[in-house]
Image (tube, rainbow, N blue to C red; front, side, top):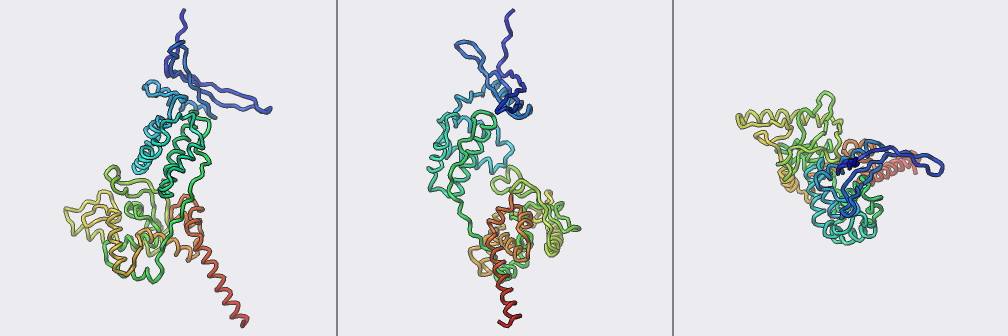
Length: 390
């Protein structure tokens, strides 16, 4: 009786144990039939290994689907360009539209022209470094983004056992220049608030200035995120910017994590005032009113404010106040600096601003902390001299 041949896409999983330096190590291995040698008819198999059965099962199933769809390419024959196409199609599904557009644009315009024809298994670190060096002339942030896209794609190839290690590891990147921040001083702040009084973005300015929210987060605030009883603002979404707002109204916060800001009493009073303003707007708009999104800040008819509209209105206000070179985002910087002046520690400030790490917050605002320490030492020196009659 002829032996039944395994179908393409069929696979097996088994647990294996190896001994190294006198110690036993256990791992899981999966093998998938990905085709047959046209000359001998023998099965061509691809193996995957991992620490858990679940991990290798997922790798095996992904390969099996590709085999059955006719899209499977043996890793030994796959080019960097082919892998980038697969990665962009299959592994960016949960990313924000803005991220997908940025990544696919970098693949098309920067990475593919330089590396597409190279076999994935033959890509080496010095080749990746040469590619990074060829991007000189672009902004530092643009180079870092292109590198991140390539590194992420190659890291996924490592996880799938297509390549043993990531050739983009340990590349030397140009140092990212710190963006100079421009917080408003007390006098500038007073002038700006005086001009903003009664304007359609007065309360928007106040929330950014005294709670540190990003413009997209303020625009995405809904009334269910305002906890008046406990003086809390819950940031769990942001309003998508153009042109992505046509695809999705809301997006997740910048770092993908919800946060809660314990707001000052003045900020909560501003939000109470906004609720009153909005009710007046609704009465004036009558049947034209439509705030089905339950937004905190709306136009006269209940629609959402765009970030560009707020930025434009802010520019008009600052110009009238005699201030030049300030952006709406500088209100957030002003909040951060004033928080440090008020005695907030970096970890608390990080949480309120929604930064990914305290290290990032310290890097951005640490010199203000040092200045506060210097000022404190000078005040103490003055006190000592007064006491000791020096």
